[in-house]
Image 1: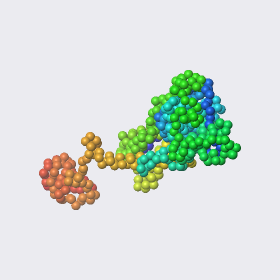
Image 2: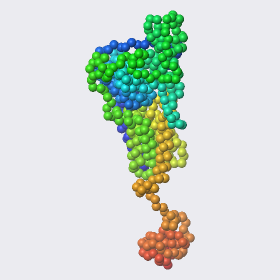
Image 3: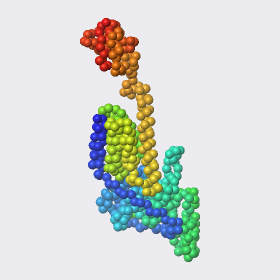
Image 4: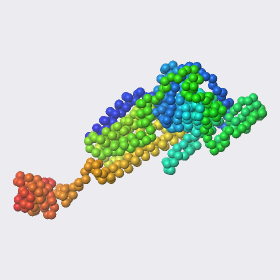
Amino acid sequence: MRGYRLWVACAVVALATVCWGQVATTPSATSPTAPPSPSAAPAASPTLAPPASGKVAVLTISGNIDYGLHWSLKRRIKAALDSGADVLLFELDTYGGDLHAAFEIGDLIYDIKNDHEGRIRTVAYVHKKAFSAGALIALACNDIVMRRGATIGDCQPIMVNPQSHGIETAPEKIQTGVRAYMSKYAVGNGYPEALCLKMVDVDMEVVRVRAADGVVRYMTPQQFDEMKPDEKSGAEKTSVLGKGKLLTISDDRAAEYGISRATVTGLSEAVARYGAPLGDPHETNWSEEMVRFLNSTAVVSLLLIVGLGSLYMAFKTPGFGLPEILAIICFSVLFFSKYLVGLATVMNVVLFLVGVGLIAAEVFVIPGLGVVGIAGLLCLLIALVLSMQKFTIPQYDFEVDLLARNLITVFGSLLAATLGLLALVRWLPKTPFLGRLVLQTQQTPASGYVVESADLRGLVGKRGVAVSPLRPAGRAEIEGIARLVMTDGDFIEPGTPVVVAEVNGNRIVVQKS
């Protein structure tokens, strides 16, 4: 019955999750374009864009880059466009964050000009810093404007080594995807492609070529060698950055290289360049910050550990109590927060409930077979993994990396929950306060707690002594063993000799001897 109640409670929560979750949308990820070949013709450095004229909406991008920020930006961009803004200025101050969320945010901004036929202009205003994923997002904008003293660059992806737990450079298969996005944004928005790729590729070389007509281009040495002879004639080649260094530059150097359109003293000047006074910024609200907090790695891991441990305890303890409540709360919060940012789907919730149902069937209906329980556990774990990503089967190298990270998170949480339960069972009885929750008394044969055999007829006629009051049930010592006995209705005091008059199953009837 307790498995049935847990199933019903999970189904109710899932239905509520689906109903409330309709407020969020789930965009499809844009596939990265292939990185250009080294022989591709380099683009000329762009000139500073003249100030535009229109209504400017300021949208802040700060802190960690994650899917919660992507969800927030979709809401804020729509609100800004609905208010009549034709310039979207993104105020950047970030060290970076989740690479895959940065791809989503970058494509969201990059596609604005296509979705609105070029009528909407996007501007990245780097307030202090735009590193890693922040630099990728900045390049997705039509213009980059930097505050004096701000810095941009260092977009090489890094990852945590699961063996050494140290930070190391991501493998080439991950860097290829980042370079593809960087190249797409640089070419599409007129930034020097070679310099943008140098933010990712530490082994790349970049040279500056000043043609005879004064036009400056940035390219690799291989691209310079492949130029036509008439293009090389009178050209001056100067090394900009060699191997072993990533491109990370301040505002003045970014303007010199043509990455930044202008250097300003503050946000008001940046907004004024686009023909409008500074208005109210479109910032994240409290609910979006809460969703971002719930989707953080630490909180997700904690929800998984507590939820999986509570689910195990729910199947081991009778009734509906604290373990069932904790499991429902943890998994409801997990799936609902992932649903809001566009990761979890209704099918993930259904698959999770199917897994819980199969495990319940294994425990309460058909115990001992194992196949149903294993299938339920697999459904449960697969649902958790799929709720953390937008794809089912990875198609790109960076998706394989994300799948591996999600598998480590889910199975690591399962292992942590198991170890936590073992530690709880071992140390809980020894704690001063929580030890009161554990029954520590033992029922031993010496205390009279003996399971009687099915055939005690041989005791008929045996004599013994009452060791407790028989009123009419109690204990009597017969053949040196304290046994549960009863009389026909007489009360017998302790120490009184008795004799077994009748045995009926496990019922031993005695009388005074």
